[in-house]
Amino acid sequence: MSEPMWDVKALAAYLGKPTSWVYDNHLKEALPSFRVGQQLRFSPMEIRQWLEERCRMVANFE
Image 1: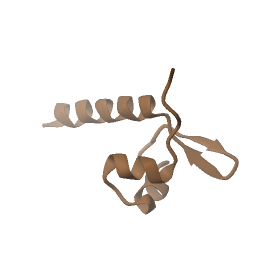
Image 2: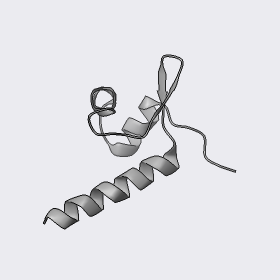
Image 3: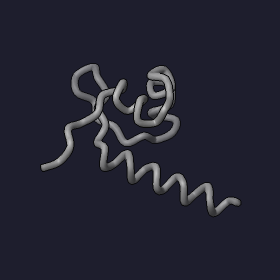
């Protein structure tokens, strides 16, 4: 069974960022997201993948 989708508040808590950061950066940072009506939802699995890829990108620049 897969994990339930995260809302903005849950993602912000996971990332250690304010909810305003999630709203302001979900497009700029290409956060994998879905729109459910007016609300954003995030797949925990896709967010973890996104973080891994970003960490690899940063490591390659150092």
